[in-house]
Image 1 (cartoon, rainbow, N blue to C red):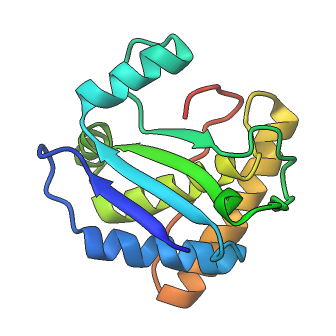
Image 2 (cartoon, one colour; image 1 turned 45 degrees about the horizontal axis):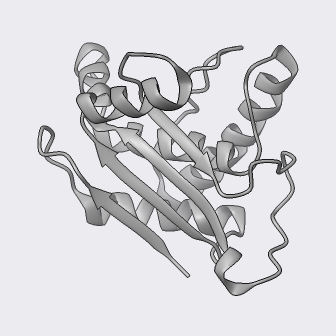
Length: 168
């Protein structure tokens, strides 16, 4: 099982090999290597369209997650009955949107892509941030994931979870 990484935008130069390696490290940390995962990089126009269709928000965003297991409880891994159910879902990364944020805040795009992907994976695993309690639970999970990632890689990534928000 593996990661399907697609770059469907040409606005921002992207090092897919680095992002793929980072996603594989995240999967290892979470023990989800047996599950397929889609990561799709898109521009503002595409992510805005998807955001409008699925969330009635006609604006670009950083990340949208579409879990294969929609009723998964946070912290629980899926128990698939069949091989074709070894799928967590898809994460759409708004690369152009993220690049503009990085430029405004003088941050590294590839580090932010990894942090946002960790956020998206948390959504695929049942985590939400629509209430204060959910936000705290998701922030704790993201912090754990990125602390482990930093320990393995020597990098200094931090969670990007927005407090009590339905964005992302």
